[in-house]
Image 1 (spheres, rainbow, N blue to C red):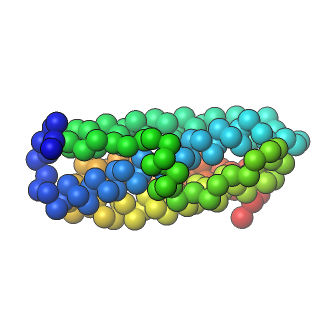
Image 2: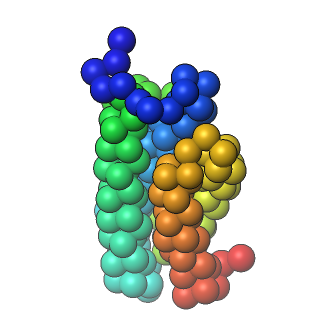
Image 3: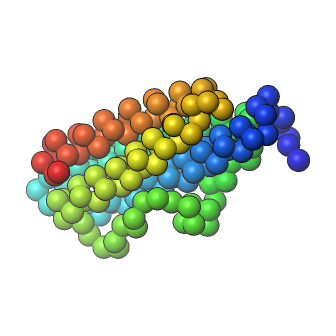
Length: 158
């Protein structure tokens, strides 16, 4: 049952819905991972990393709302529940405890790379069935790749 009926054909809606739901899960988890590292980073580069992590959190939260609202506009109920995020994320979990600044950067470079790679797959999958959704992925990937680049460049982690 749909509360809102999409104009997309059912098969296209299935592809787009899976892409949007997967993106939502990854973005929610990215915001959680970045915030966890934000709270626990220590070391000489604490302040710059701490502030940079807030930027990642803002991007992830903003786009999670955009992605969820796009799904809702297509008649799909977005699922951002903790169990759904835990079951579907593509991000490797972050260790508990304090994170030395170099380890914090390593965690974020890995998390951002994982999310970017999955978003690129979603961008390709939505090209034909829904260019509007693909445009969201294109913009999102540009933002995530910028964060990925900045963590690597500023902190010299390959």
